[in-house]
Every structure is written in C-alpha cells, then in structure tokens.
Length: 137
Image 1 (cartoon, rainbow, N blue to C red):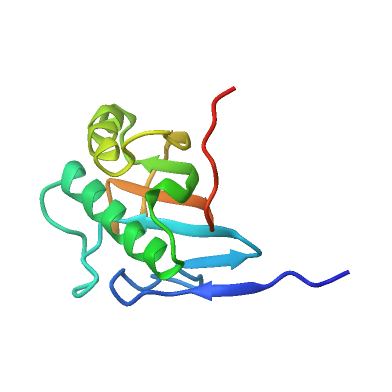
Image 2 (cartoon, rainbow, N blue to C red):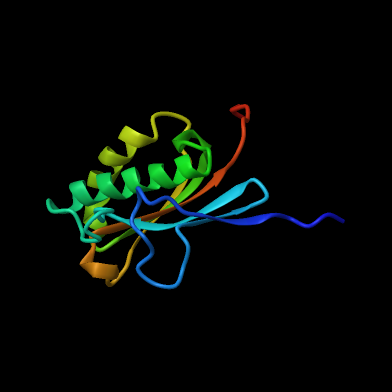
C-alpha cells in the first residue's frame, strides 16, 4: 500500500497563522484550509469596516491559499462559517456569492461566543485538487 502525501500549503499573500497551525494542509488531493479571518496580510490586523469588509478579506485570503494549492473557489466542496453574531448571516451570504458564483459548496454556519482578534467572521474550507466534472443528481 502506498503512503499518502501530506504537504503544508503556505502563501505569503494571505495572513500567517495566529497560533500553532498551518494555513492549509494538502492530503492526497484534498486541501483543508484553516479558518480565515478578515485580516490584512501585511499588517496582521483586522480590516476596518465591520462584517462585510472582514468577510471579503477572509475570502480574498482564502483565494490566495487556494491559488498556492493550484486551485480556485470552484474546487471548494465545503465551508464552515463562524460568526460572532448569527444575524450577520445574510451579509456574509451576499459577500459569499461574489466568490462562489455557482455550484455552491456545502456550508455550515454557527454563532460562537468569540473569534480570535475580536473578528466578526471566520471562514474555513475543504477543497479538492484537480479537474472534476460537476453533475447533479
């Protein structure tokens, strides 16, 4: 039996980890992307403007990590959205559809008591490398 390849994915165009974790890990053809806050990659601080701007920046950062893995948003099969206030869900959805234009990935969303750095939203994802055919059941 051959062993699976495990590779750490890192892109300097996205913020570095704020603790002991990787931006993303590739195992075989599956990419596990750590939760992205709306942080400016250069300053390491949350972008100003609240929920909408943080969600845009979090997804932009995710896009940079996907690029480093040779993927794009069409490769994403699952996301988890953590919110400081579940009432912001519709705001995140409006931003979300600017990045995921069709064949939306599975998505879970939760309100949690607090996010790192006092953020409004954190978005993590699972993606699959390589070309694949999109079909419907």
